[in-house]
Every structure is written in structure tokens, then in C-alpha cells.
Amino acid sequence: DTEVTQTPKHLVMGMTNKKSLKCEQHMGHRAMYWYKQKAKKPPELMFVYSYEKLSINESVPSRFSPECPNSSLLNLHLHALQPEDSALYLCASSPFPSGRPSYEQYFGPGTRLTVT
Amino acid sequence: GENVEQHPSTLSVQEGDSAVIKCTYSDSASNYFPWYKQELGKRPQLIIDIRSNVGEKKDQRIAVTLNKTAKHFSLHITETQPEDSAVYFCAASVRGGGSNYKLTFGKGTLLTVNP
Image (cartoon, rainbow over all chains, first blue to last red; front, side, top):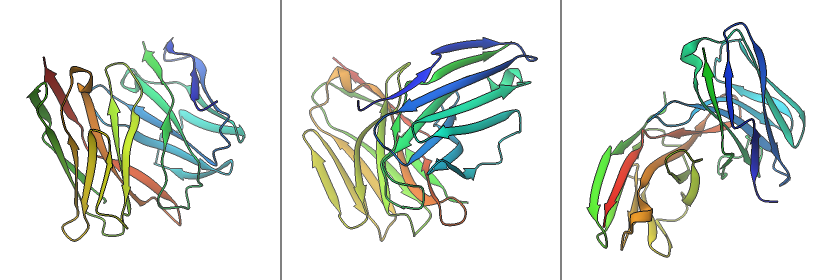
């Protein structure tokens, strides 16, 4: 299995809802990432987990809460989102921990989130 | 902060022509430079990367060159085909706080290959 998978593919939620995005990889990768991508823009880093520990938080609002239950799984818990949070949320993984400077990242297909 | 500039923002070529996309970076400590291709509605896909210990890398019709002195790197696609049409992002590894590293992306180039 050489893929990063994400569920759900699409999600529509209201501003008072609580939902979670899930990401999974079975490649034995040591680092996992959450990115946010708006239309016609590059991916924007949100969080990095290295060896299941949070290593980078790009000053993301607390309405986004990441969780790494084990080395294969990464969740993003969503609560009280705003319409401007609507975007494609991409998960990625890398063979090497975030303390290594040269490493390839592989992206999942993303979850298309719409906040109404 | 660390910055990656990418040009052009759009590029239109005829099938069979070559396409070149250029990026510059500001962090002299950057030593890893990947290129991603993203088709409409799809995930970014790593197509080629280069590390600072080499100046050029080639994979079939795709090549990347790196000039560390000038802090720029370029993607070259030869014999372009309509299926090469996509948005291409360059990136550079930069310090992400403490002893961690992250990728900083360019703003992307929309490549259109006309049949």
C-alpha cells in the first residue's frame, strides 16, 4: 500500500457542528501533515506530527484540533468553523521525521469542506 | 520569513514544445527542492525533486536544475503533451521552528498544452 487515504471526500457542515477529518497511511512514514488549500492557491501548512508528536503548529486557530492516535492515523477535529474555512484539506506523509531537512511528502486526495 | 517566488503564473505552449518554470528562494539553508503537479480536483503529486548536492536531475521528459549560488531552480518539460496540462508548484525545505523542517510552496504555474 503506497497511498495516503482521507475520509470523507466531501463534507458540508454548519458553523455550530463538530466534525472530524481522517487520514491514514500504511507506509511506515514517520511524519504526517495537515494542509489547507484554497482554490488557485498553494497548499498552506497547518500542523506537522513527527513520531506521533506535534512538532509544528502554524498558529492555527483553536477551532482546528489535530490528533495523532498512532503512527498510521491522523485526525483533524473541527468545531465552530467559519465560512472562510471552506477549502480542500490535504493530509500528507513523509518517510522521515520533521527533523530531517530533505524529505519527500506524499499527499492524500483531500477532503473538500464547505462550511455553511 | 522564508519565501519562494515562482514564475510565470500562467504558461501556454503548443504540444511538442518545451516548457520552463522558474523559482527563486530566500533561505540559503534550504537544501531540498520538490516539484508537484496538481490536476484539477486532484491531489498534488510529487513529480521530481532535487537536493542541494546536485545541479541537475532528469526523469524522462522532466528535468530540474538548481543554482545554489543564485538561489534559483527550474523545471523543464520537453515534448509537452496535453496531459501535462496542470498547475505546477515548486517548493523549498525551510526551518519550521526548533529543529524541524517544512516545505514552503511557490504560488503555482498553470500550464496549458494546446493540441
